[in-house]
Length: 230
Image (cartoon, rainbow, N blue to C red):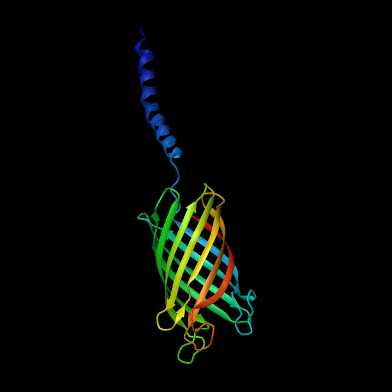
């Protein structure tokens, strides 16, 4: 039998060591827990846009403008997503048009790999808009837009952005500008991604001159972008 001179010191050491041992276990559990998924995303996108058809002095496939889009979005816990963007568009001939837009959408996970995201947006465009209204060739107008996006996750890194549909019009002027686009996204890691897309748009404004007195082909574009999530 161990003498009290041995058992008492051993007991004291055991009692002192137990909290530290438990703390180590808790720390290990915390270290092994996966980090929370990012909820905020910032992005930048750039694209040249080309005329889709011959239009006056503009020939099909000639450069119409170049835009840059700066965006911030947030994913909420209940599958809602909100975002804002600012877009300067630099037109040939030295003119510039600006856009500011805010949107809210809802992600619908149809399968494990396919997500549908309808959204609605409200925005404002100003400066050299090219929107005729009441004798003004560059009306500054508020507008609304409806979007529908479909994304198919092919692998952990690759996503096919199968379609992105847009209907857009001004509140107090005629400015119908629907668009359809498709593209791919490559996830570099869990927080960084690059993407590219191609798009085709139409336009109708309040004019008696062809072709935009009726809904007509307007522009095609090839965009590239970068997104960072945190």
